[in-house]
View 1 (cartoon, rainbow, N blue to C red):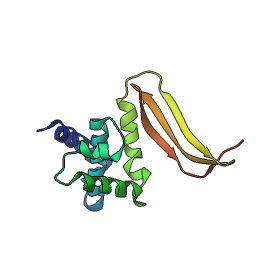
View 2 (view 1 turned 90 degrees about the vertical axis):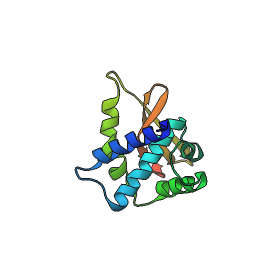
View 3 (view 1 turned 180 degrees about the vertical axis):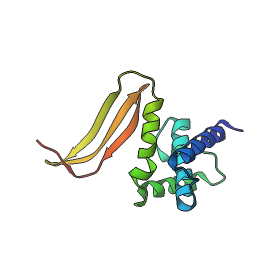
View 4 (view 1 turned 45 degrees about the vertical axis):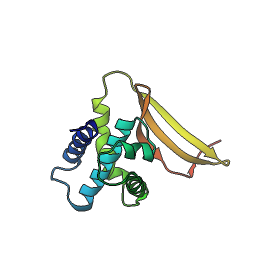
Length: 142
């Protein structure tokens, strides 16, 4: 078994076991599979661009097909933060070694009163692990 396949299987098993008490079915199972592909590709490639992720995911489909699948999943309005990201946040934070956590908040201003986007991350081994995302157009005080 290749490293990519072993990593993907471990991540998929962990995501499926942590999501709900019963086994996910239907669209939820398919969405968890795509999420496991994305996480596995990010870990394997050490990059967050879709082409790099698609190169490190075990699949019989073409690389371009995987890139399109991932971009559609990320843009899908039915993929909610509450269902696919927040349940794993506690597991992520619990797996970090004990000690102080360094939080980073990133944002880009547009115009006078708007924030383009923002991410809250915890720093670990020179990597930013995302915790939350602020939506576009958030008003900021000046």
